[in-house]
Length: 393
Ligand code: DWN
Ligand code: ZN
Image 1 (tube, protein in one colour):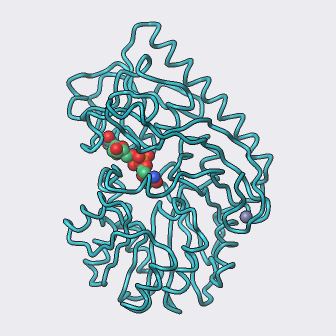
Image 2 (cartoon, protein in one colour):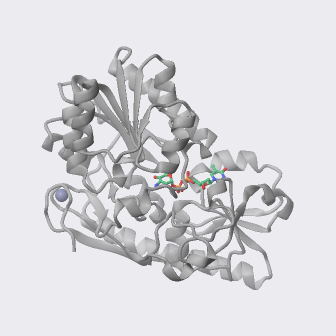
Image 3 (cartoon, protein in one colour):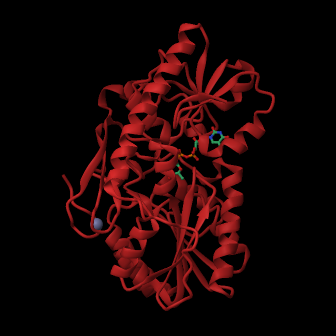
C-alpha cells in the first residue's frame, strides 16, 4: 500500500471499488482483449487529512493523444471559467502581466486572460487538448507541470503573476513537485488559484463516481492549507463553487493577505466519516442496480446520457453492461463508435438522442443537470439519477 504523497504517512484505506479500467479508456472492439485494469481504492492520511488513491496508473497512460475530454463540451463550464478568470484578476488586484495555467486543456480559460491583454501560457500534457488550444490561438506547451517545467519557464519568461488551474491539481500524483514548482515560478506578490471537486460535497452527495484513476486527490481546505504551508506559501481564502457537484476554489499566496475561511467548516472529517461514506456507497450501488433491474423487467429501454469519466466508476463498480443499458449518447466525437471502458456499452452520437427518444436515460453528467434539463425540455422519457439513492427525476 502506498504512503501519503505529501507527508509520507501510511494511508488508512476506507473504500475499495475493485478492478477498474481507465475512466477515459473508451475503446474499439478489436482492443477488448488488451484492456488495462488496476485496483481502485481510496485512503485517508491522518496527518495531513488528504484523501487519495492507493494506486494510480501512470500519467502517460491517461493523458496522451487519445485523451477525449475537452472543457468546451459544456457551455456552462466555459462561462464558469470566464467568471473564474475575472474573479482571479480582481483578487490579484490589477492587470497581471503573465498568467500560467496548469492543465489548460483547450484554452477556454486562458482565452479570457488573453482578451484582457495578459501574456498567457498553457501547460497541457494531453496532445489532443493541446492541439485544440493551439487551433484556438492559445499559447500552450505540451508538457506535464512539475518543478522542472516550472524552472524552465521561470528561466525563459520570469515569474508568473497568476498561476491558475481548474480540475487539474487533483490529477497530479507528484503534488510536492507541483507545489515546489508553483512556489518557484510565482512572483512574490502573485497568487495561485485552483479549484477542484470538494471532498465535503462528495461525502454529502455520495458522489463516489468522482473517484477514478485521474483523480488521485480529494481535497479539503484543511489539507490544502497544510500542503501550501509545507512549501512556504499560505492559503488565504476558499470559496465554494457550484460546479461538478460542489467544488472549492483555493487562493494561495507567498506574502501575507487577509484570510477568509468563513464559509467552510471541516471539523467532522475524521476517518469514521469516511467509513460511513463507504457504507453509503454500497447502498447506492444496490439502489441503482435494483432500479435498473426493475425497469428492465417491465420491458423499458434504458440508455445513458453522456459517457463521462464518472460513468466508468459507476458502471464497473455496479456491474452494469449492455444487458441493462443499450447505449450512451455523447456529444464528444472522439468517443463515438467506441465502447465504454470495462463494461463495453456502445457510445453513440448525441445527434441520435432526439429521434431515438429512449424511455429512461441515466444522467451520468448529473453535474451538468441544469444545463442538460434546459436543453432537453422536449424529451418525452425520464432521467435517472444514479446516486445518492438512485431515483427517477
Ligand atoms: O476532472 C475532470 C473533469 C473536469 O472532466 C476530468 N478528469 C475529466 C472530465 O470528467 P467527466 O468526463 O466526468 O466530465 P463531465 O464534464 O461531467 O462530462 C463530459 C462528457 O459529457 C463529455 O464526453 C461530453 C458529455 N456531455 C454530453 O454528452 N452532453 C456533456 C454535456 C454537458 C452534455 O450536454
Ligand atoms: Zn499526509
